[in-house]
Length: 351
Ligand code: ATP
Ligand code: FE
Image (cartoon, rainbow, N blue to C red; front, side):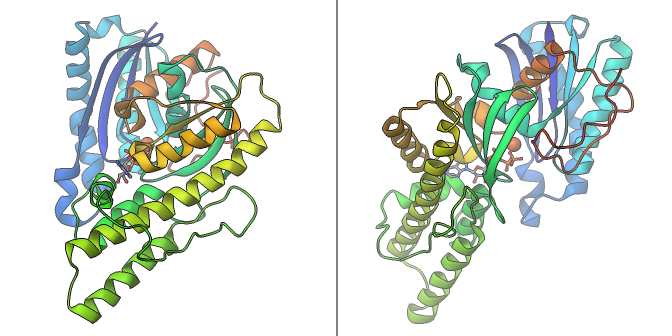
């Protein structure tokens, strides 16, 4: 079946057409320009922009695929978690399309979209271990099926992407901070500043990143007080120290998550990584090496499918439809929606 996917849970508006494992079209329109002067995503502005742009993105996706709207067999939409206004915009448009076309509707968890993406681009058998690291999330999941996830642990405060973005802001680097910090770090000495490795002294797979960002702030203020400002060298060294600390923490916690996962004795042990921070080569490289050491196959989707997009929503929606999941016109948007089998079912589950 041809699935139309819609995504509007954060600051990207996206529509995609997916059939099986073929992405026929994937359109993503960012909103960075709209929020730039506010220093963060403004929920009301995001919701309005999503409402205005979803139709346009859908039209462009159909155009890219060379297909008419009537060819769509089902509509998959992000029903949460995320900024409620944006998610509502998507859910409303998906309902309208489902009603006018007379085609099934399925609400998808945004995190499930990220978590299942490795299967869109690779033959990856269940169960696999996934590290989701993005601007808003950081968690370890054992992915057992399209509706079957076990969360092994996650951040207790900031997500790593958020920490990269804040660090960039503290050091006067452009947004998004991740790529800017990585570029600066390339010429830096990670040893000059001793930054903390939060929660490494505690057992389990939980992580923390807010202290790291505070440590960067303190180091910057110290340099400003001592010498009146930051040199290029200072900035590069701080970026390198920050990135090394994040990578160390992520790799060490991944080692623990792998141990828990391997305890189940999976037939074909494998691990994947999703979210925008997966683009970071120090982090990705560290995890790849660890997988090689521990006998896990490592696979990661291409970056365009790691960051927010609607192809992952269409693909996850297709997997849910194949398992008989359908939603009706009472489908609701969910600002919070943990990806665990103990989470309450989505309102609007038909039959
Ligand atoms: P979510 O997916 O959790 O809803 P999001 O839309 O902010 O949130 P993504 O689009 O997956 O997340 O990723 C964006 C984040 O990834 C940003 O915080 C950005 O700084 C970070 N990022 C992108 N490239 C890199 C990189 N090379 N190194 C580190 N972080 C990066
Ligand atoms: Fe996301």
